[in-house]
Image (cartoon, rainbow, N blue to C red; front, top):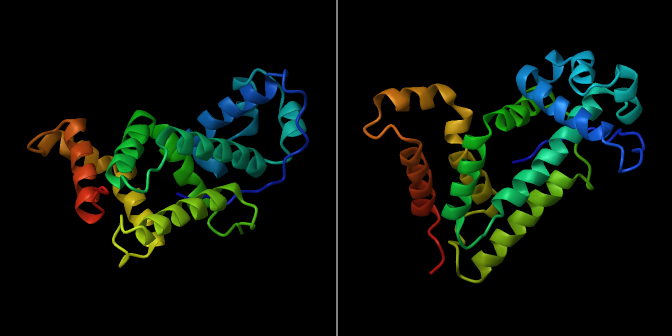
Length: 205
């Protein structure tokens, strides 16, 4: 799951200063709720119990602040879900769990994709580096005979991510499933995600 970022961040004050953490937490809430264009730095500052000037002392622009929030969120997702290229159904299940528990985090990422689609990514972009690492891992298990080599590993990663986030990205379908599905539970939606990935990319035996 990739997002381009503005790297224009000012030098951070001492780690003991919690102001930056409060700003990031407030910005996470503001961006998830209002998007990038709709977010207001004055509201972020108020929620973080600081001033707009202090926000800009840490981050040179609203886009730079969003970039910092999104960068941290991608790191958290990677740590929480931990891809295992020999068990893609399990990975899909972890992604599903993460975003079901945190729909605001999915909105945060989606806003960036919608509002910053043309921002170029550099070779040192950490999100692109993480994606490249996952693709390399998938290629390695293909070479080891543990994953069908007929698939391009980039397609494998994209499809697994898309299936895993199907319900998070389509809340209107989640509402319909809750009302009309034979089994309306979240567990049933999760099972469908895991089964779909298992049929496409079975666990290595």
